[in-house]
Length: 174
Ligand SMILES: N[C@@H](CCC(=O)N[C@@H](CS)C(=O)NCC(=O)O)C(=O)O
Image (cartoon, rainbow, N blue to C red; front, side, top):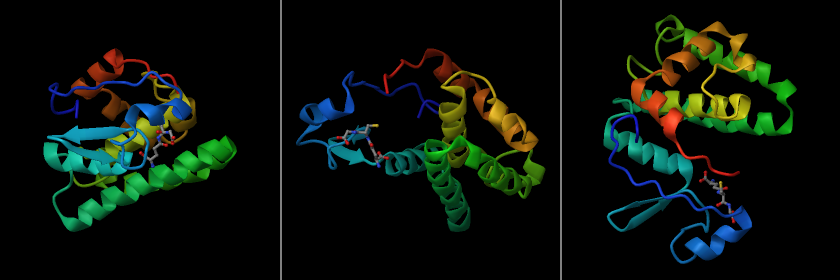
């Protein structure tokens, strides 16, 4: 959202997960965060929210095939997140898959899908940044072994509105 607009309200709940339920019960479809409320309709599930926002702000690719490619990258994020949780040693294989996928699109010098930024680029950057750089504005060491992925990471991180958001976003205790 912050890539396209500053007009969003981003309330945080400073509670441990087990304390969340009482705060959002009756409102959260699955009793979990995050939630996005749009004109009284409440959406849950982070990737569903992400896809909705991408469609709204023009970050979703335009063809069905490209949308499926973006979904593929996002689903790859889920797999990578699981690998990171299990054992970081398993991740180079997955990072190499991503490097090779990037290489197939404009030689890996642009984005994961088509010729413009999509939510797939942001989702992948966000995961790598969270998993390996702890939210810091750096290309993680684990990613530096993969030059196209490292370049992608740096490109996304330096998009002005993303850079600004990374600098000013509130810290959320996890
Ligand atoms: N599949 C959900 C998972 C959401 C999730 O695990 N949320 C955590 C906070 S990050 C939560 O609300 N935990 C409290 C609980 O499950 O009771 C998504 O992607 O949004």
